[in-house]
Amino acid sequence: MAYVAVRGGQKAIEKSIERLKYKRLEKKKSIKTEDIEASFRLLIDQVLSESSLYSRELAAIALKQAEGSVEEAVFLLRAYRSTLPRKYYSRNAESSSMFVERRISAAFKDIPKGQILGASFDYTHRLVDFELKDETDEDARKFFRKIESKFKKEESEIEQFPKVVDYLKSEGLIAKIDNDDTEPRDTTKETLKFPASRSERLQILQRGMSQAVIGLGYASLRGYGAVHPTVAELRVGQLPITIENPNNPTSEEDSYSIGSIEITEVESLVPVTKLLKDGSHEINFEIGYGVTLGQNETKAIAMSILDQCLERKDEGFATSDEEFVLYHVDSIEATGFISHLKLPHYVTFQAKLNSARKVKGNSDEKEI
Image (cartoon, rainbow, N blue to C red):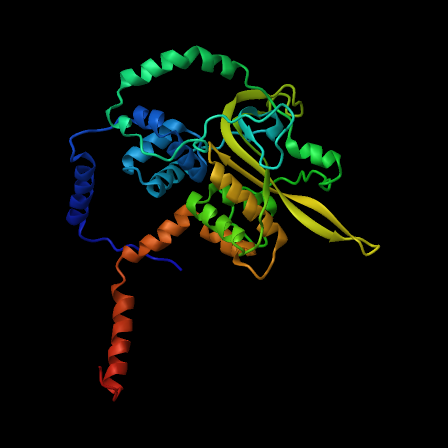
């Protein structure tokens, strides 16, 4: 269904936009974009993920313009992203090459090379720190000087780690699956069609509204899909990105490095009972996968749950219906369709109103 905006009231619209800027600046203060980028790391990461544009500076500008509204900031960045030329596609990035800053497993206490807690709110007390009200730049510099040498040493020791699921595969507890080298369809350039491939589903979920993905993942945990996984490994770190050398495109060793991006990756284990030919049962594990730009741990876990829900295709649950899930997690589609209700609907509503009046006029029922 299409909706056409009617042009009119140009002066009123200009005044509305002017009023919007007034509301943003009415405290007579303007926050610097570098302050947003420095102080709202996880908010920036959420915008990066939902907009699929990896630029912390642009995310900070969009958040300032949107007055902190994530949905508006994502809208701005997706619109800007659509204007950019696409010069290269990167080579396949193997997550095993990630330089890990945080790595935990809920499935095993002891994992090869150990668990790394990294930066997380998971181990903090959820108490409001009122001292932050008077925190200054000098306080930040003082703290940084105090721990700089220790943290620089730790950062220099960041390395690549083996994958936990590889050890389960070696024991035969996870079925080996051949690599699917089919070139994925780019959901940012092509219309989504059903049935969708797994790569398309993962693209949509990665770009999905964080709260929507988390909400549907939670619904599955509560029984609407009944997928209750165990996190084999959650890792956050820097993933190197390379592009092919145009003069030697077949050589991976001759690729160009264009930097790295921070990602969150989750591999969840879901037990599956299989009936063998002799009538006995065997328990194996299937993997639910989630990956997002930036540090978006809860979203990545929920994504791994929905990945398994959509792979199982249990028709009894909405969380296994790919059309229901994929169409309803997109922030731009959801925000746009809800927001369109604010546009003029004079003609359609008057038609309904006239029908209601006509029925009322022909009815002998009295209003109570």
